[in-house]
Length: 240
Image (cartoon, rainbow, N blue to C red; front, side, top):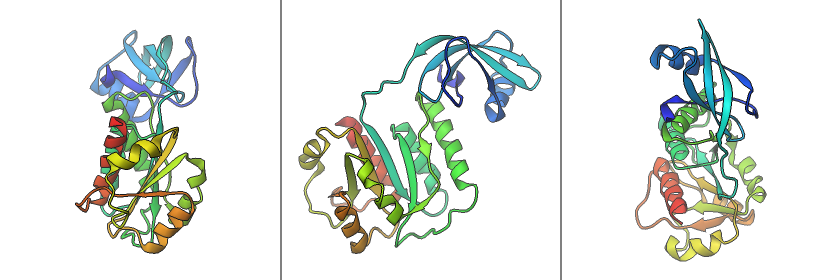
């Protein structure tokens, strides 16, 4: 059913009519070749999923929300990923895989050793499209928020919003995650994972992070690429 799952903005109820636009409308008409009376699944901004009946009139695609299928559970741990913007198209990969692995939000940022200092206009919108497509493909009932890039200092100022901030650093105490994570996660409902750039974090940044409540963690003997580290932690956290 995920091929026929589409996301719409706002909160809706059974009986509502929603308009589907852009690439989703083209997919419905030109790729899936659906028409009047065909059924799709519509998910709103609250994570509520609906069985919906289509009304197609040329390029206008509307859907009537016939019945509620399921609401997204609200008792799971929420994990956000703060990712230093990498060079090239690696951020697309990070957004796609973090979405598949359940990240609630993705916060791109620039740090002292960032190779990329200006991702360019429109990149955040591109990343949001990647997140939406990955959410549809993976069967998620919501799309993670993807913010525009901010500076490291602004990111650190947000640490207080979380119950736990995990700060992977190659110079952290060499204690395996299996020995540290259970105690760190106890009672933590909102978690932030902070991943540095290609050149890693500086000592100054690590000091600022720990002063703001971040917990440095060690990911093992191998040095992971920036686009790999978040995936490793998200998979481990999902397992835990």
